[in-house]
Length: 408
Image (cartoon, rainbow, N blue to C red):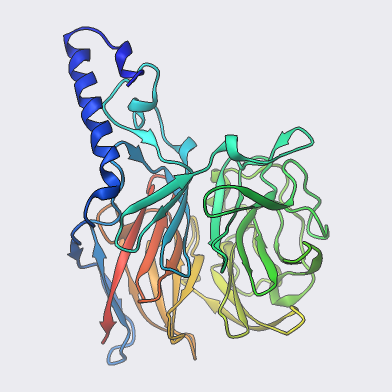
């Protein structure tokens, strides 16, 4: 309440009282009962009539944020082995009109940016948060914390991995569940192109389990790169079709205007090289790996050998004529392995595929700002019960829970 004490006058005294009440509510947050769910329908397009597919409703009451905190662009979502839901967001995407409580002196009764890394229970309770530049490791005098965080993965030991796509964000960082730095791959402000075996180029997504670290490397480079998790040693890198990474790296820094640029001539789902945003890398647990080639409106499926090498299996084109921000941004697999969920940024929907054949069965969601609608749909993940968690960036700035209600 030191900050509130700076306010004087009748109107400001009222604000002080409200701020005090907000602090008391926030302090009691952990003891509150889980919120009641508010299930509502979402738009569904049936593409294969007569074929069962997973159905969902949106829990409009999820998640339960502390009353004084706000999320910015939610750049990643991951579900850990205990079904806790982790999100990473971009506090810098919030403006002073969003975060009046954080101004000095405060200009409103709410809000402050939430910590960059936030953990929720499956039922939506806020469990913990940490992270920001003050927690970043310093290498040769340079703080490695990303300017614009991107992607998140929580491994079997419940340690947290993420990268970044801001200026100079060329490192993947790994922290304990409570925010203590463990290790890094790459170095901030250093990048060496698609052939470099140590440096990264705006890594977009990470997988770190089963003895390996796979990185979608990503916004500057155009490849998937693999490291040994024991010693961080390089063990291989691949471009489209499991060929050596091809094509030049992006010149200069990435900015959001390039996400909608048409200077690449538009999506090419048959391109022999990845487009200029390799957005996800998703092993399936049964020897396969999906990679999101977002700017080419496709996913590529690979088979991974015991030595970690990748072999191309097939292309999966999604709404191939789509322009703008394009389509394939993230992928999740149902707990039974039967269905594939592919997030489509430009069309604001999630495509449901039969994984055995990759036949498209249905699509859920649409562009919009209401529950079950999406603006700049960015990341998805799934829990052990088949519920989907969906994040949005740009002006979307939220995470939603889609509750699995059965296949019919």
